[in-house]
Length: 236
Length: 371
Ligand SMILES: Nc1ncnc2c1ncn2[C@@H]1O[C@H](COP(=O)(O)OP(=O)(O)OP(=O)(O)O)[C@@H](O)[C@H]1O
Ligand SMILES: [Mg+2]
Image 1 (cartoon, each protein chain N blue to C red):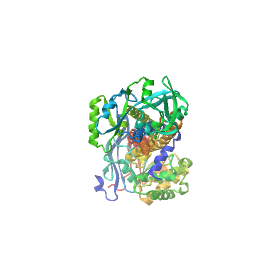
Image 2: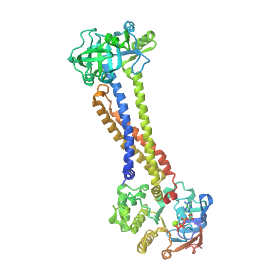
Image 3: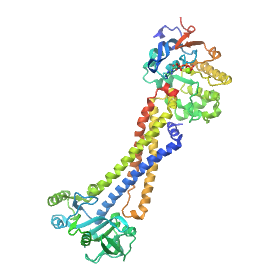
Image 4: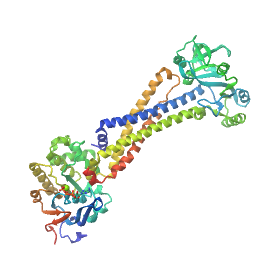
């Protein structure tokens, strides 16, 4: 593993020759991706539509398995995980462009959903959901349903939900893609603040270059490859 | 919010579909309760009848339809000669269509035997002797036929006088037309024939002695058998048929129930594919998703079972109170039957949830999210 050669900070993700092929070979979404992500980093991923950004994020979150190459999380191969759910529950928070809230559950309930995989009691779940919703400024909408909220508010609920189990990595796939610029700015601010306060590693896919500019590092993708990557913060 | 909240929320989000599925299970379970309740109730009342009359053993043919085939009444004398037999009395029991009643039990019993002594006269009297062309009616039969003392009742081609209304302390007795054996033999063309020998044993007859007696009876009546009162119900052809019919109808209802619930749960899983993807993305284990589907399915079964039992019990009560059924029906709505039926419904729910649950757990999270 590359971990022994790192001077400071821990290696969170490492991809080597990562490929993802769909539909029995007819679609190559990732055609050999190499990169590293370090503890507490904020990495933006940009690139044209269809270049494989979402696919990459899904592999990082173990929502899907690589076709070829290696992808490790803190030295552990994600392809060999016995229980990807447990990995997602304990380590990962997802934020999606389309929010992906459950329509039949209230705001407070949506935030509690991931906690069923954790150790919290019923009362603790309620309290923690309230706390997280307070953090994203929605403590007054606890009992509303997602359909009663604006897009920006929905995304804030989704962010609160992503924090439910205190993840060490946030994976955000165009979190501002469905929002107007004002709401988008709020969401980005919120993510940045969480990243700083909690030292959460933040990997964010975006089309918006002004958002990408806020990241310490921007990976540029094209046709399933990373075509531009600034030097690693800790690379020799 | 608890896990149960999530399960419950899944059920109420499609109220019409859930309601229709519940109705389906309920009807199936109601059929189970009604049919099995009737069969059990009938068995119980026969058992009680033998008990009340004080019959220890019954000899009958092994073959026959709803009631066993007739045999020659001369067997009575030979059985009476065996040790430990205190009294033997023949009866001829027939299910006949009498006037308005499509099927009614007609019981011809030996004049003067102990089977007459158990009858309490409510109105009128018992026939004067074996030759009087008269009958008594069990009180439920009287009600069902709409007869009172002084009326006549037509059995086969014969008009017979109703001289009394009696209470026999068991529904089979109360639902029957009771008359002297020779008279029934004569009007139905069964001269010299009976289909039961009722035996009363001497006091303190031991088990081995009873077994010995059964062997002796078997020797002189190979195509027949002697049953102790407690066994009569279990082995009677009629009851076996009734029981098999009620359970096979119940089984059919259960299969239909399983298919209905499975269909609903499959639809649920398909239409919630995207949401299952979300649950997987936020870290839910596949087992938890299977469990969610199974619990939802089992809850559907439980609720259907409870409403079904209520429906079935109410249906039986209504049936019981209609005049045509009076005297033929004494449903057994024991807690055992009700709980068994609810348990069956829950099992139906769980079984129906297995395949949909398995399907849901096989979804790829990334695909499910795109759905
Ligand atoms: N499940 C799938 N089956 C088949 N092909 C897929 C699947 N998912 C993605 N693809 C294909 O893989 C390629 C990369 O898709 P991906 O969603 O990763 O792109 P993207 O960079 O996120 O694009 P966008 O900016 O539009 O979201 C595309 O050509 C897409 O059609
Ligand atoms: Mg995408």
